[in-house]
Length: 426
Length: 172
Image (cartoon, rainbow over all chains, first blue to last red):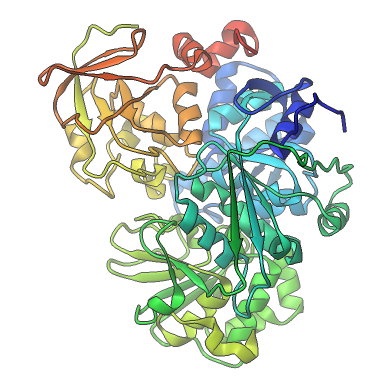
């Protein structure tokens, strides 16, 4: 680590200073080197168009760019098939990496496959790129043309964000998970409360969590408008990144005298399961206030909650039981490796026996292009990160967001249910 | 940058926290690649008649946190293709903000509470003012940062890059 200036710095200020080669503080604009960048099938078509408009013959570094086909995979229609074909052709022409259908969700693959490590700057043409903040990566979503500029030059411009410090303390009660914590925080801060800011997460609740559970929290930082949701790299994170990546971690901690625009603390020792109601992510209630809401569909998966421990939580609740006859339960593991582990552990067998439809790895019905589009008036409960009107393909349907435990419990009951009712299975 | 053409306000029924899914739904952005075709479906899920009312040169009027959510560049692209001259809102979400200036769509931050649908507007970016012609009201516009103004003047980030072979900002 290079020592920058005398003034205390946040994690964001330090990582961006390291990548600009000069001392930066919040509010400044700088050109920074980017360690890795990628696009998915909803954004890569315009990346390719913008890159072609630049008229360049090669990408800046073919090892630092990937395309992922995850949002509509496999393709549900001709239009999407053409986009996928365009991506495959670009990958061949420029000899760049690609995760095709069946590999998984970009935000699972990028860290899991070792493309990023602590202290990196990462840009993704997807708003949930903030997910890897949990492993101390300054990663943020941009649009396609922004990504094309980085693909061409290895750089982009950054406005160094101000930082909100969030401390979460207390032992989580049974049946309450990192998803409930972040929904609770988003309720307090609001969907516009952290716009253009970095959020740093601290506290004994966070350090007690697995890396997978922490990824859920950083994933949803953008739902309060944040640019990044950063955490320090403790031993758990360092072990995790070493297991997944050959890149040398350059972990970055905030200085004790770093400047924060706001400091917030949450005690979650009495938190009950949280549910975001239609049609906004910050429209959050305790699950106990929603027990009369009937559901038509349940979904466990996505970059928020499609990891192995999420599938385990859902399977434990479902084991030996049948999904409510009025409910369609869709499950999408976040990657091929997670899928294989879920098969090995018998989770997929449990799901299928209970009456769930297990999809291939990918985003599943989250973006509303396929794999479980809702009918008029239907209600879904999902582990995803967005419940905007029409998000799952039909503006006349209703989406609730919750933890895998709450979703699985609800699928059994046919209505929104409190997972603590299944306390022996938690 | 004072514009000579006449501009009219096109105000959304709901103005706060308009996400990019509402600007252009995921079910279209994957299927349709032509921005002109996408433009026919803007705001369809929250105001199905809206797209048909938009005229070339209109100014879209919204409230807080416009463009939050998904990073889809199809959102500003569809607005530009629909003919919008600019978007006026109280505040913008960050990815949308970057995307818009990157493709040469002007965003102005100001108090939009008193701008009604259909009102004629005059916009003077240099002076930082929007004037509601009919009401005679003048609103202050937050100055457009020099970096963003440079991108607009060059016609977007791709043109900027082609012109200079990289980023060329005064202050960095």
